[in-house]
Length: 395
Image 1 (tube, rainbow, N blue to C red):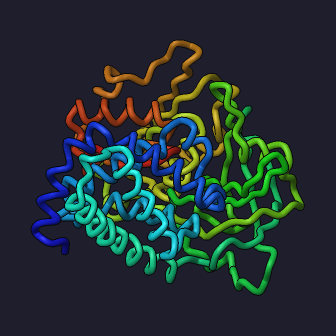
Image 2: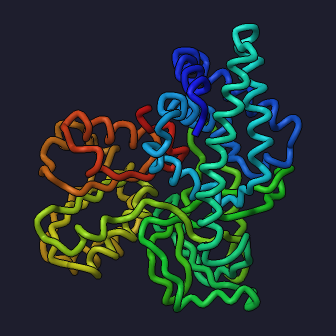
Image 3: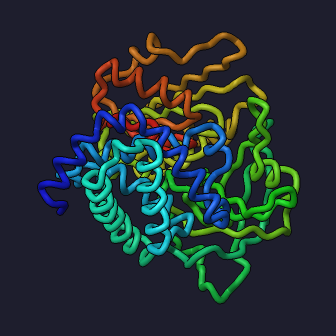
C-alpha cells in the first residue's frame, strides 16, 4: 500500500493527467522505442499510429491515479490487460523499462511543475501498480496451456466473408505435449500470432479471436484483412496472402477474460443478447456455440451488422447454430442498405438482459454509449473491442 503522502500527491495530480495524459504517453512511447527498439516487436504499430495505445495508457494511468488508495476496484480492467500481456509474453523484466520512461515522460512534459515530491510519489505508485500486474501475470503464466510461442501447422484456410479468412491449425512440435483433445478453451478467448513479415524490420504480434472453442479438428481463429483508411495491415495481409495450408505459424496460448456468465447460461429467464459487427462476430459466434451446447432453450437475441451480404461473416455457421436453439430472434443490419443499428433500435432490447458486444472501436463506442444511455447496467454489458480496451473504459 502506498504511503499516505504518496496517495495525496498522486490524487492531486489527477487534473494534470486529465489535461496532459495523452501528451505524456506519446512522449513515453517515443522515448522508450528509441532506447529499446526491440520492444517494437511487441507493440501493435497500427494502434501506435492511430493513437489508440497512447489513449489507452493515458486512461489506465488516470484511472490508477483516481483509485490509488483502492486499486482493487480496477481489478477487472487490470485482469484484461494482464491477459494481453501474458499472450504477448511480457515479463517482469519489462516493467522497470516502462517505469523509467513513464516517469521520464512525466518530467519532460510537465517540466518544472514535476517537482521531486511528484516524481518520488509517482515512482512509488508505479512500483506498486507494476507489482499488481506482475503478480497477476505470474499466475497466468503458470496456467497457460503451453509455454511461449510454438509452431502450428495450417490444415485449413477458408473464406468466412469477402475480407475474412478462417484458419484451422494443429501443433507441429510434439515436445510441447499439446493434446488438442484435452485443451479447455473458453468461448470468447483469442490466440496471439507472431509473424516475421518480409517488408518489416520487426516481428509483429497480433491477437485474433477463436470462432469456436471446440478443438475436434484443431484450433480455429479468424482474421480480417485490414486495408481501411489508407492503412494496410501488416499482419492481416500477410496471413491472407502468404500463409497457406501446410505452412506453419507461431502462436501463444489462448487468453482473455471475455466470457459468458456461466450461471446465466443454464437459466431461461434472462435473455442472451449477442451483438457484433464485421469480424467482431468471431468471439460472439463461439459464445453462441457454447450457449446452444449448454442450454438451447435460453432466449437468444442475435444482432449482426456489416457492410453488405458479401461481408456477412460465418452466415452458414450462425444459421445452423441458431436453428438448434429453441427461442431465437435474429436481426441483421447491412450498412450499404441504410440499415442502422442505433439507439432507437437498441431501445427495443429487453431489460434485464445479458449483453455481449464485439466489433471495431467506433462500433463499440456507439453501442456501449447507447446501452448505458438506455440504462443497461454496467454489470450486464460485456465487451471485447478489437483495440486497447482501456480506451473505452470510463475512468
